[in-house]
Each structure stands twice: as C-alpha cells, then as structure tokens.
View 1 (cartoon, rainbow, N blue to C red):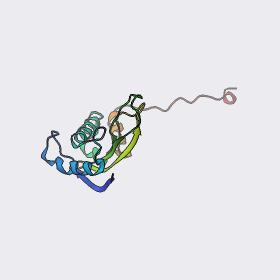
View 2 (tube, one colour; view 1 turned 180 degrees about the horizontal axis):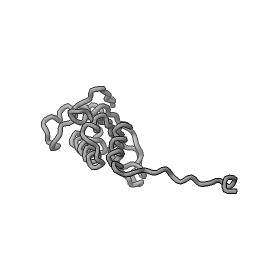
View 3 (cartoon, helix red, strand yellow; view 1 turned 135 degrees about the vertical axis):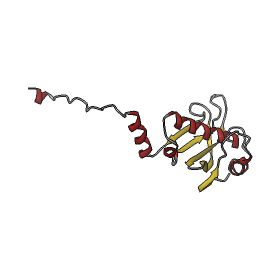
View 4 (spheres, rainbow, N blue to C red; view 1 turned 180 degrees about the vertical axis):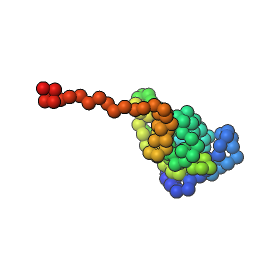
Length: 157
C-alpha cells in the first residue's frame, strides 16, 4: 500500500458528501488503502473530518483568516472489542486549512490491533499567533493579575 504526500494536496470540496469534486480524494484514498475497506477512510468521511474541524475552530472563535494553516491529523477507527482477533488496517490522514478550504496533504495506512485506543482519533493544531489572537479576544477588557507570591520560610522569619 502506497503513501500519499503532497505540499499542495487535494482540495476537499465543501458542502455535501456527494459533491462532484470528490473524485481526486477518492483516487488518493483508493491508492493508499488498496483493497482494505472496512476500517479505512473513504472520501465522504474525509469531508466529514474537514467539516468537523471547521466547526471546532469556528466554535473556539478562530476567525477565518486565523484558520489558515491549521492542521488536522485523523486516524480512522477500528474495532474496540478485544475479542477481535488480529490486526486491522486503518488510514492516517493529514488535512491542512488553506484560504480556499481544506486540503488532503498526506495519507497512509497503519496496522493496528483492536482494543483500547482503536477508535477514531483526530487532533487539530494551530499556529501560536492564531491561538494568541483567540486568547487576546477572549481576555479583552479583563485584567490578568500575577499570581501572589508565597513567602518562603526564610523570608517569613
């Protein structure tokens, strides 16, 4: 199974999972996943991952311009029951938010074992400047005071 890595990536169409622009995403995932289909991402799920990331960033008060450069790493889920014997193949993808939308920039398959931690996992990362801008807006008009310094035993005596 091949891995896919691209600086520019494949644009993930906005809107419904039935968008006509899904063909390039489907091609990439077909090349990466090979014959594995049960626990791997398909194009519709990638659209849902991008939509969910956009929702999370919007809910956390990131402006659209601050979302540019955000990354999400997502791993498709598998069986969590330990009675599932053996390993399964899942997909690990990286999406990057650009001005025109989310782009699939890397995809590869992983071999995992069932049980704890086998479910779907997503991690969003943003730049320090974007996080600082959100923090500054959240604290606008609020004075943040320094913590009170505790005296050591020697200073108290």
